[in-house]
Length: 466
Image (cartoon, rainbow, N blue to C red; front, side, top):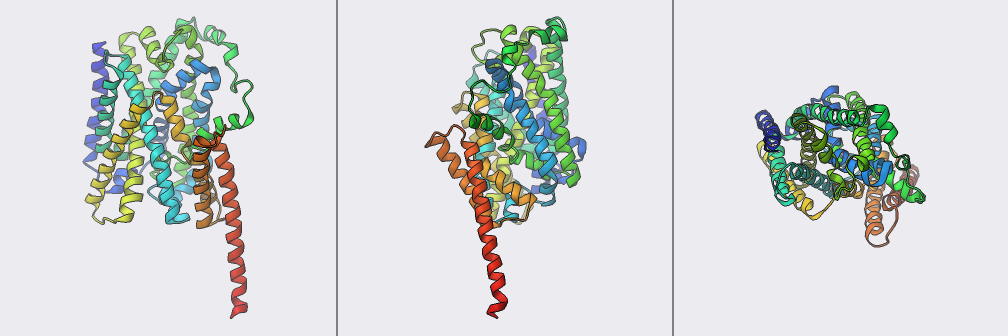
């Protein structure tokens, strides 16, 4: 066990060294946040995959399927894979053409400064919740393979990811994503193959899958709740700044689009491993007090020490490749779309220092959130649903059409936030995200049509007035 911890800590140390080394070439805010817009197809694909395939995809998804059957995997891998495919097939090229640094800036360009400010207020909490999920997952892994309690490992995990993120920015993030993505795929393959062989081969493993647990939709669940379960990971996550940063960092709109599609396919393929192990989990590790410990438990019981190191390294890879993106996203919104808009700083070194300072602030906030929640799965679901319906509506109309202006964008985003908050906390909606999606869509169309009609009337009255 001591050898395993040393190996994992060594792996983390290598990531820190890479971050420090790459940080020497960072000269500007764009270098730090968008890697100089230099990502090609391979780098962008692996970076999108590694960023999206985090703690929820390994620890959380396996635990949810262990407890709920295949329906626990609706969000992950199926929903989040569909989210990547949707971004690549529909939005990526249009977003890249804006030339913005953040999604909030793209919305500000298309609509108004007020819309951009609302996007910041919505997106920063979502990124922090997601970062908290990754920190908690890293603490779960370290706790499972050591004698330390979760409080100790949480503190250590937060310090590691903070130093790692502050140093290298997106350029280091993308470079390590390639290594982390390969390690993740290798680790999942090793565990999946080992467990399958222990059960007698693929045919025997498939025969053992519990038929009663293979329903993708739970029985007797009302339609609004079913829609909610799919809309939150797909439509609520496509607006995430973590994804937007990779798209905006691509060399061209074509690269952005193709990388999203490729990452979605890769995500689904890799995500089927935790799902399958989660379905087999009640037979392989019955009676787990914490279902999110399933994968670490299977690694301890089925893998020899050296392969356990490979697998734990894969889990650490999944977590690190996601959490640094979360913290960078929050920092970019706070600095670029917050402080620097209120008080512009022309000097690039000071802008870079400010952005790194915001990264530290984001890391401290994520650490506090990780302590206040008990489930990785719940943290990620909360981040996906945080006011994203109105932003999804505004992004869809704003990037793909010329219908609607500043008033329509503001109406959609504001209505989405209000409906989500009221539905969650005051009215007790069964499907608050779906409700906010509907109200935001109505608000955008009504306000867009009204302002368009008013503009046409003013134009037609102009010549007559002269």
